Length: 524
Image 1 (cartoon, rainbow, N blue to C red):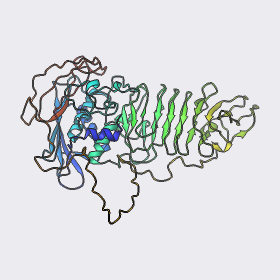
Image 2: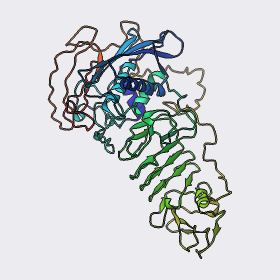
Image 3: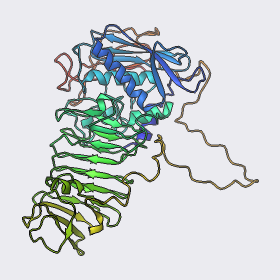
Image 4: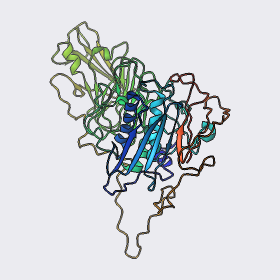
């Protein structure tokens, strides 16, 4: 399995990119959206451009002057696929041609149409397919590495189901995924201004991005988080399914009814997670996290840092369905029950050896042999625990936040969060070289493209079917596919380009009968 950094290098192996031709330190593209799109389809095109602009230092501006490149976004009413040209220094105008057949006037999030837009715009920015395939492909024969699926990249041909632990239920990504973000940032640098204040993803979102926001339990998110800083939250509180929510960079979460559908890009630091009504698993990272499991019997792991486990209701962890904190560290981690006490009209806790029928009594237990602990609260005076929290690790009275208490460890990072980078590791100090041993020149990376004057700039392969520079479709040729899980496709001939078309054998619920699954047509 490639890391996202390795995959980003693979996606940019050809050296294609939009160059800063005017030398202003920015990469700016003008664009034109064809009038053949409906207003809603045109808005989807603009949102797709915005999704690339959010993650990398590239700007799309309609009818911009003094730009470094231009992309025409054209509609293809007789196709459900797409084709796009690749940029380089001496060809600043590219195109992304998008099929609108059977799309409908107002495509919804997760529709194949939106992924085609993001995919073809990725080509217009210089990203290639993860493997050397074009027009048709089979995962078993053509995938270069195990992660060559749509779970990690919109540039892939192959269903996320080819990668264990992923199932999008016939839906598609609506924005760049983990490996796409790494690739775009390798070409243009990371956009660290994106969402660099406190941001919530999912329910109660303040991202102002449709792909990152949830409004009802019927919504199905498929996205990768890129975040520039602040104190940030994954909020999946509106779901009743059993979920896994992982705050670590380069990790995947199971959110709602899908599997492996939410990921976190390399270099991103998220602080907080909120679960739903199911039996959720919440996994923290190396910083101070606030983890709120919600209803159900949740399993919570704070990871490193001084973590706070938050309870808003007595029903969040009951004797019948108790939460388990898997790595509680007394003196560092905290359990916050202030909201529970406020709802019960209690001002404080009284710690006792056993419950005797007084509201506000609390019993802490610990078995040193098994390292199992628990916290039980009687909120009503019935002599029974209304809130029961179990732990691996000892809980002490000083670890519990009641009314009037403030955390001794700030749940936010002590220092401002550093701006995420595609390669965030700090360089280690190196000793000064001896005078008689001059520092050797660094060895060139054979995988990095070398700038060369025209015509030695990396060029796409000539199209044997059509030598002319502009796309000219040939008659489609059916290509057999022996793998029942992979698409059957046909190749459209064009100038140096990459593309989609969707005549295949794999069923997808989002498609009408005229097209069942995506394949790609490309010349590279």
